[in-house]
Structures are given as structure tokens and as C-alpha cells.
Length: 125
Image 1 (cartoon, one colour):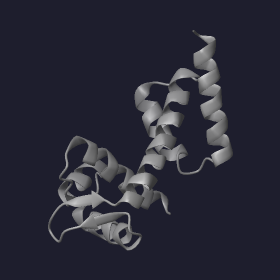
Image 2: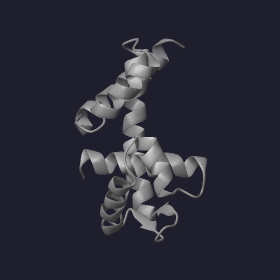
Image 3: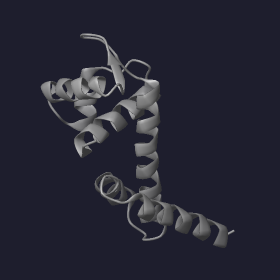
Image 4: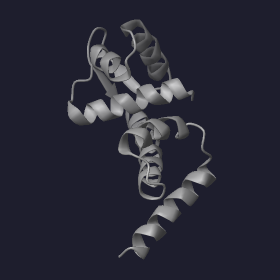
């Protein structure tokens, strides 16, 4: 899956947590892209069976899409928390950096970052 497709999938996931009805305009605003770009990405996500979309209607995650989006979001969250707690990065910068790093870090690196975060949390208790 490309970085762009992952970003769209994660955005659908986050928006669906805010409102049951996710629309093209919502995704366009969230990702700061034009509506035709969203429509193109949604076609890809539909072909991969990650979303179901009514024509000119709402977008909903499939079971497979929900699982994939949740995994992407978890990666993002683990990295962001590491950047804030271990490195002292500001929340704003950690958010931007996590968006970039979530796509390129190996699973091995992510596991080690998560373990480091857990050890650090346990050490401060």
C-alpha cells in the first residue's frame, strides 16, 4: 500500500470516529487535497476492499479496512508518543514527523520503539 493510500485510509478511520457519515468533502478538508484526488483514492480503497462508498454518498470502512486503518493509526500513535516522551519533541512537530515516519519505519523498529516506551513508562512509576 502506498503512503498516499495509507493516509486516506487513516483519515477515513479518524473521521469515522468523529461522525458515522464520512464524505468526500470531509476527506478533502482533512487532507487538504482536492475532491478529485479523494475520489481517485477512494476508488483504490474500494478496489482493495477497504471501504464501501455510495455514489455521492458516505464512505464506510469494511472490516478489512478497519483492521488496516487501525494498524496504521497505532503505528502513528506509537511513533508520536515516542517523539514526545523520549525525545521531548513538541506535539505539533511530533504529529508531522509521525505522519512521515509511520510509512517508512520497519516493523522491527516500531516494536523496539513501543518496547522502549513501555519500559520508560514503567521506570517512571
